[in-house]
Amino acid sequence: MSDIKRIEIKGYKSLKDSDMGLNALNVLIGANGAGKSNFISLFELLGQIIENNLELFVPASGGADAFLHFGQKFTHEIYVRIYFDKIGYLCRLIPDADDKLLFSEENCHSLGKDDKISCEENLGRGHKETKLHHQAGTFPGKTATLLISSIADWGIYHFHDTGHSAKMKLTNRTDDNIRLHPDASNLAAYLYYLKKACPSHYQNIVDAVRMVAPFFDTFSLVPYRLNPEHIRLAWKEKGCASNFNASALSDGTLRFVCLATLLLQPELPSVILIDEPELGLHPYAIKLLSALLKSASEKSQVIISTQSVTLVNQFDPSDILIADREGAQTVFKRPDKEKLASWLEDYSLGELWEKNVIGGRPAWVPK
Image (cartoon, rainbow, N blue to C red; front, side, top):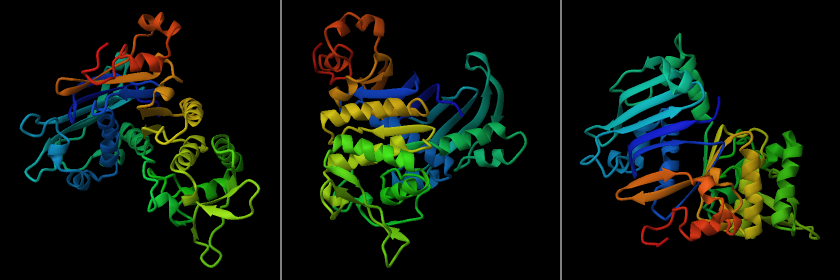
């Protein structure tokens, strides 16, 4: 499955009416509350649809009102259309009497030249869970099958929680290693799997962590002797024989371990989405992170949001997607590289963002 070429969104949270193209690498910038997280959360909603979990997910996330732009009094439906290279997906979601969302329209389609629909498969209306899976089991159902496999392979990651009770610090089952969890709660088990099955990729992760934390020697990944079905993350410091657990790592270092594991694993998700990956990282670690993101975007589509000027400085204007709040809605745009050419002779891209030359700052900040 190819990358997402374009996505249309209407009526979803602050995204009243958006139509944007996506590149292999997309770095979202904007003021607090501009709508970056809302954009990323849309992918979570689509993932829940594919998992046949819409009916449970919506109430658990605040009900239909929380998803509709300014609620049901102002917005009557959510419209989403995704364009891949040769196929696409459309859904319209409306609220029901129980404050849940149901489908008023759902279809998958093949795309021809200029994204024109060449063959459309209408999946009906009034259903509470997607009918893509039903279509995939019929003939012709190839388009639905491709959509399911692609969207199910998206990965949305939040490594913010590194507190004392963070799941990434707790005991894992050693067999919970199919895929790194969105919160890295199976970090120890997944690293253990990589060490055994993909040693070169595992070593790349170790080397990357050493670049950020020079005191770090290696991970100590050994299942419990009396309970070998379980494992907990531990590590060694250079020149020290003792093992330390994950709580002995700084929050920033632990987050970088999660990021390095995600971005250096052998098989990447088809789309990687990370909300503010730079949290807690030293400027040098942020620069290394940018290199990992660029490398990952050669194999997978990468979408991140950030508030870091240092991180933005590492990218090309064509990688940047600016979110601004105009009135009551989020508006996305990309910087014009040609118009910025003279500015970039004297300033970095991050400095232009700080100066509000390219937008993405609070509305009251003057240019």
